Length: 120
Image (cartoon, rainbow, N blue to C red; front, side):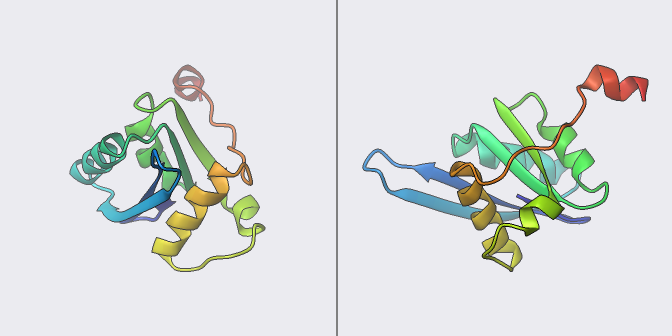
């Protein structure tokens, strides 16, 4: 997922029974209703690992809205992701990020658990 101030571009990457991989892309607003739709989109697609890239603080409301809903929720450092070659529109970014994450080419950044964030 590419996270921006007003939108989130999501791509589900699903391996079908026959081995083919299908990508479904959609753009959501960062409003509460938009983030609920995003969570439903990911749930309906059967996504188990959510990977997002964001700069600044735009990731926080998206991350917090999805936290606890999926087995793995990764925030990837935009600087690290930028070093992996091959992409550049928001929709192709989302597909590219889903693909490189599936192949182990990016790793998540540390996000403190809620209890630690409350102390901060």
